[in-house]
Length: 46
Image (cartoon, rainbow, N blue to C red; front, side):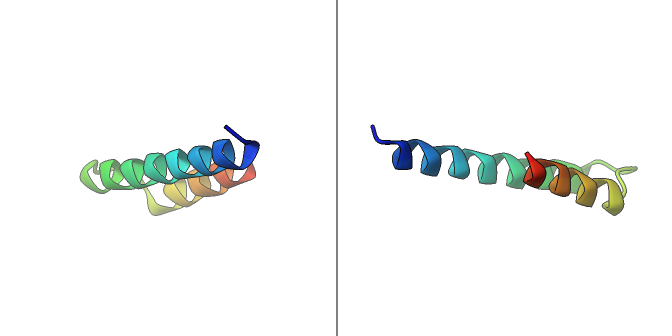
């Protein structure tokens, strides 16, 4: 596998993780939108 294939797989898995976290946070009360946004910013900075 080339590095581009690996990068695309990693990007897709990150997107899946973010969408799963978003769905979970919608079901859990008490999680503020600001905390979710900071989580997105933190994951984007990695």
